[in-house]
Length: 158
Image (cartoon, rainbow, N blue to C red; front, side, top):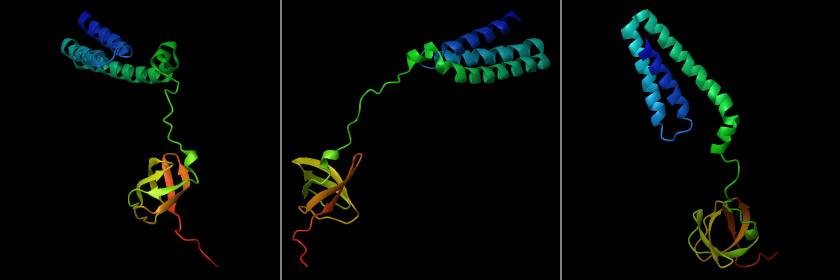
């Protein structure tokens, strides 16, 4: 009887410690202790008592998991493990490119590289292929996506 209770108590303690200790080792050993406690109860006390221990451990693990998932993230201990701050902006917006002109360094089919403000920029077209060395103009900036269109080489006369 003492062995079954000891295995179950040690298993529960190790599962709780898994919250604080990295690596899943305590959790795996805790689950193994719970399983060993259930198996030992079957061997020692027979199938009926063993089933009751198995059902109790199963219900306790499921209920304990739900309670832990609901209440632990809001505790002071959990807040020590999580960060609510932004560690840095990735700075992908390039609104300064809107309306700028340049030329295609590669063929844009529909994506490629262009030289805009003396910088190489990955760009996409509005769907039309643009040949290399064609003058282009930035028509939209959508996050990291820089959309360009070909600039007519000669003005349209009417």
